[in-house]
Image 1: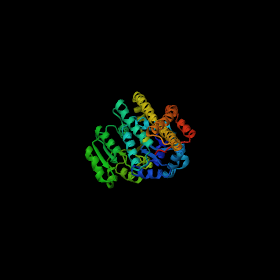
Image 2: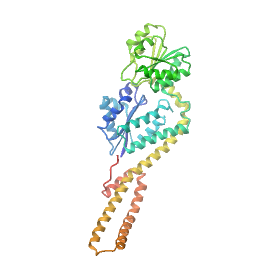
Image 3: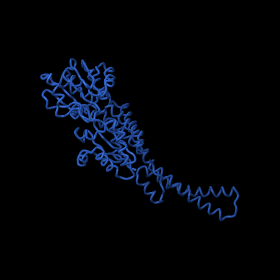
Image 4: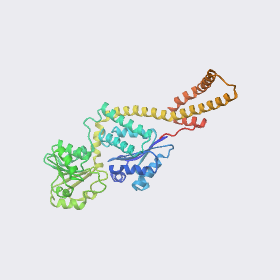
Amino acid sequence: MQISLVGLNHRSAPVTVREMAAIRTQKLRDSLESLRSYVSYGVILSTCNRTEVYTTSADSQGTTVGINFLQKYLDIPHHTLHLYTYMLEGKAAVEHLFRVTCGLDSMIIGEYEVLGQVRQTLEVAEEAEMVSLPLRHLFQSAIRAGRKVREETEISKNALSVSSVAIELAAGDIGDLANCQMLVIGAGEAGRLAARAAKERGMSRIGVVSRTLERAAGLATELGGLPISMSNLAEELTTCDLVVACADAPHHLLDVSTLKTAMRHRPQVPLVIIDIAVPRNVTPAVAQINNVFLYNIDDLTSISEQNRKQREGEIEKAGEIIAFEVKEFFAWWQDLEVRPVVAALMKKAEEIRRSHLNRTLKKLPPLSEDEQYNLEMMTRAIIAKILKEPLHSLKANGRHNLGYAEMVRELFQLDVEKRK
């Protein structure tokens, strides 16, 4: 059994490619159903900065399966995928997921959001019945490691998020936010974090736009902001100083025409737009409009790099925890690999013993119950004695060499029960 990973993230691909590969939350169940036609078991992790497909298979074709699925399901050209994706198997794939869940592979080191995203990803895959025992244990182990890193290190102390970094970037352009007006497009977790970060910096007025006024009102009430209908979006653009766009939408919500109309009412007043959504909420050409300053999620790199340097000591501590948890996972995994072979070997030996004992009993004169019992115990003892060393060797070597169990299976021609 092999664990495979195919993915792309903020390090391997620009936002123009990541948004092509992004799978919206509402589409995750559908994507798993599509993945089922390629492989029996798999989990898809899709966030603003990554799309990754984890699978288990009996051979080494997992990465090929992952690439083929992404290409067909997302309709991304083959050469583009190969240019920007990474393909990992075995220990490398496991270590990668642990680093992701612990916040070490994020744009913002130590961010909390990814832990919840990994947990939700597993839940959706469970509901779709796409999770095998190894995948379930892998993701649960990674989630446990993520909690442990955050509890035992200070990597998440005063942790930033993509949303809070967006506000920091805006403050660098605008200056004092106390007299500014902000518009948040999207009432999800990213919108909540952005609004909270802006409020902490003294933002005077925060408007929230969402698909429904009810969703916008929920976040606005929580943060003392104003709910705004999507139909009034263009009007709000004429007075706000900062827009943070982070809605989970399949298409652009702000285009050139809308922004040009808004800027006619404020030709001398700059408008800063930070689009941290993937796929992007704002048409890139908006950046060409005079006095409009547009940033996307990849423009947060400089601030995120400063954050990484500040947490270098904690990254090393987190790495030690990850190394231990990965070792624990593989101890479990290797036991899992060996267990069916052990069971199959014992079953085959018992079948041979019983078959020959029954055949011998038929040839002997009638035996007493005590005689039959003694014969039964003697044959069992012989089998146990013969198998003692092979079983000990199988368990010991199988934990360090996954090919050892397969060699035993072939040597004894064992019918090993397949695991899910």
